[in-house]
Image 1 (cartoon, rainbow, N blue to C red):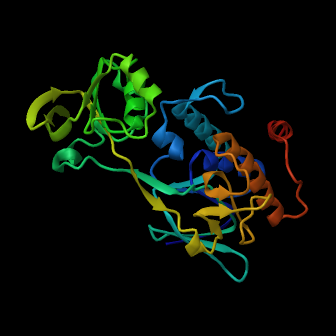
Image 2: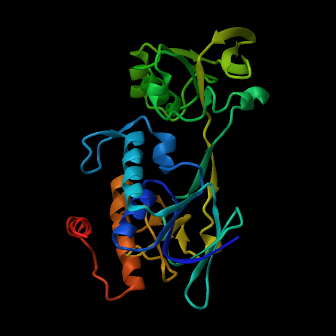
Length: 334
C-alpha cells in the first residue's frame, strides 16, 4: 500500500532518541512520521532497564527508565507527529528527484525528503521460555520484561535467569513483591561481578542454583505452579508470576542494504550527523564517530544536530537553530 504524502522527515526508530526527534522535528515545523518496528516505545531503555534509575540526564536528578520513556512519550505526543508501530523498514531508496521511498515489512511505502535514523543496531526480541506450554501464559503472568515492580506488589514472584539481568530484576522486585525466588540453571551467574553477588546475599531473595524449570502448570487464565528439577529430583514451586530472561535475538538494521556506510555495523556520520547519503542523518546508538559517548544524553544532543541539519538541507535559508522559549511563546500568542 502506498502513502502518497511526502513528509519533510521520516524518523526510523522509536527509542529514546527517536521519541525526542519526533518532538524536535515538529519544533522545527517539519511534517514528521515516526516508524517504530515494535509495538512499544523506548527501545533498549524500555526493554532492558525500565526499573533501573538513570542519574546522568540533565533535569532528572533520578528517573527510572520507565519514567523517562513516559516523559518522552508525553513530550512527543504534545508535538503530534504521525506514528506507525509494529512495522520494520526493510528498504530505503533515493529517487532521481531526491525523494526517499521507505518500504516496510507490512508492504507500506512512505515518501520523504529527509530521513533520520534512530534505530540503534536493530530490534531486540527476548528469547521465549523453551517449554511447549509457555505460550499459554505469556502476557498473562509469564513475562520476558520487568516493566514495573509495582505490577507485582504482594505477589510471589519467581525470576528464572542465569545472568545479572535476573539479579537486577529480583532486587528491584524485593521492595514490592511478597516474596522473590531467583532460579539459576547454573552454579554461578554470568557477567556478574563479585560485589553484585555480595549485595544479592544481603537481600531477602531466595536464590536457588542448579535449578531448571521443566514444566509450567496452571489453568487457561494463569500459571500457578512450576515443576523444578535439581540433580534429577523434581519439586513443585507455587508462584503468582514468572519472569524469564535468557538473552535476546537481534534483528539487525539493514544499513548496508540501504547504501549507508558503516563501521562494525554502526553508521558513520560527520559533525552534522550526516551519513554518506545526502538527506539521511542518524543519531543515538546507531552512529559512530571518534570519541563518541554511549549515553542517553548524547543521543538527545545528536538528535538536535541531526534535525537542524535536516531542516537546513530542506531550506538553506532557515535559521540554524531555534529556541523553545521563543517558539512556544509564539504559539501561545496565536
